[in-house]
Amino acid sequence: MDLQAIIYVLIDSLAIGLPYSLLALGIFISYRTLDFADLSAEGSFTLGGAVAVSTIVMGVNPLFATILSFISGFLAGMFTGILHTKLKIPKLLSGIITMTGLYSINMVIMGIAKNSPYSNVIYVEDNKTIFDFLNIFEKNYFNIILVSLIIVIIVLFIIYWFFGTEIGMSIRATGMNGNMARAQGINTTVMIISGLAISNALIATGGALFSQAELKADINMGIGALVIGLSSIIIGESVFGKRTFKNWIISVVLGSIAYYLIIAIAIQLGFPHYLKKLLYAVLITIVLAIPLIKKLKNRTKEEKENVSN
Amino acid sequence: MKMFKKICMSLSLVSLGLFATSCNSNADQIKIGVLQLATHGALDQAYEGFKDALESGGFVDGKQIKITFQNPEGQDSDMSTMAKSLVRDNELVLAIATPAAVAVQTAAKAQNSSAKILFTAVTDPVDAGLVASNEVPGGNITGTNDMNPVVQQIDLVKELIPSIKTLGILYTISEENSKVQAELAQARAEAVGLKVIVATVVDATDISSTTRKLINDGAEVIYIPTDNNLAKNIPSVTNISDELKVVTICGEGNMVTAGGTITLGINYYKLGKLTGEMAIEIIKNGKSPATMPVLSLSDSEYSISINDEAIEKIGIVVPDSIKSRISE
Image (cartoon, rainbow over all chains, first blue to last red; front, top):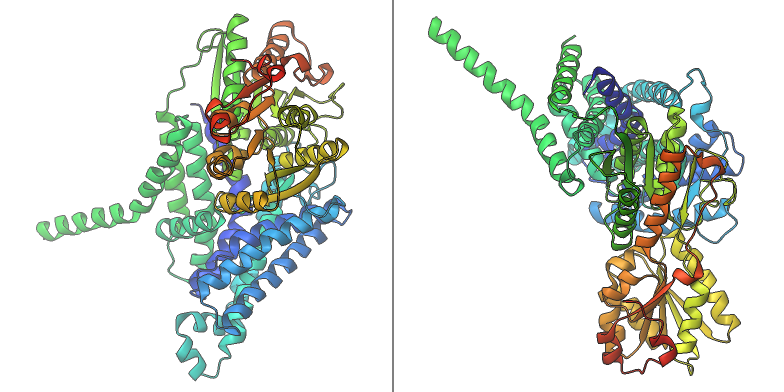
């Protein structure tokens, strides 16, 4: 294995990890700040891809198509929020209802561009994607990395700014202690609905970027999205820390890249394909154990110092 | 700053891990990558056929050629990473099934790669945007097509049970290939004067109840196209259809082995072999995929397979005209 292969492994994991980091950030908002395990993620990730590719095929500008994906995810999140707050449906079930309904909606959306009642896959074909805007590199995956990086940085800034405003703070307070937040005069219903809307909007944008990078949207692309997002968050937190809010959201993005780095390494190692999932599990365990190993090392160091004192 | 140090540390860990993996490839070997969508009877056979064709052409894995096999088990983002690394490291890449072919083509485009791409088990390469036309593919990609002989399959139903009036069609709603075949089957069945009932399933869990509903609605025979979900879960259909004495006619042989009643279908092993012969044309004779037409198996290579156990349970008599065409 040479240096070139290592560089390529890094490039591959950036080209997938960056679009997926928006998914991780979306799940971070629902799961960590709002304390809401939102299963609508699997539906809204596909929704974002379906809306983006369908509208691009119909001739919409790819940047605008990506914004439409953002809006569609926003609406999906609002729907989950309304189910939970207004109809008093438990959190998990609200997410499941949205996810289930979106399955059919996504098929219908992909069908529109094909003039068919429904479809389960749609290709970008020769249309331009958002990654063709900054066509500075000859090789397309560098453009994918650059454009995704710009979008992720903008999103990080907006999240950081937004969760410092009064509304953002109120959303975080609602997630930390709903009763206390209500006692402070925060309208927690509005906060849950808007938090979920933002979360799913980001997830849908992640889906839009991923499907434009892969040049297709597929009804099954959201399967496992929640697991990938949660793994990214937890890897990010344990390896890169969560001391401050800024540190925390950057960790989530890095965690997503690290997750795909792990996958890319596992693939490069060339294990038999039926053992690959086991290899993922082992590698993720190793990564998650890093902080513990570090702590142990620090402790032995301290003990040594104590002895020498 | 601390964060930066951590990133550097993790990167160096990664590099160490990669250095540790030794890669003992021979410079003279022709490198061939294979990306197979998922573990699946038909797709496995296509891969076997591909390897056997290469071997009988004098290209043995580990000697003249080195095959790298990847299988993402249907996971989209894994498939993308695998496609990228295969396109980068190999001179020729075989993609098995449509999503794999699209992933490999996308990866090659993104890298401006000159790797030659072959596909197999793709139903409609033009619709998937893989080739400009089946006759002149145009790009660096060509392969073999597994369009199911739907018309002949429906005709086989009429031959097996001449008195049939209502045909049920069952497929998975999320599978594009199945949808195409179901529409063809419906058109043919209506052309030969049958009433058609279409039913779709979403996943593995609603197959039994949908099958029961289809039969209650009056389906006398159930047609199942080459559907990945139903191929995996065919016993969920046949447990009910056999009991209710309804024949299932399937898209391909493996579904009959697993419980379906009868099929007239393409042989994926032969299809893979055909693809392997195309690979030899490319690596030995230096042909360009751009000018090699997409191939499919000829009519004479369709074979009928039958499930004797199911025939017995359902209690029908197979006419001699069909018996004589059964391939073992």
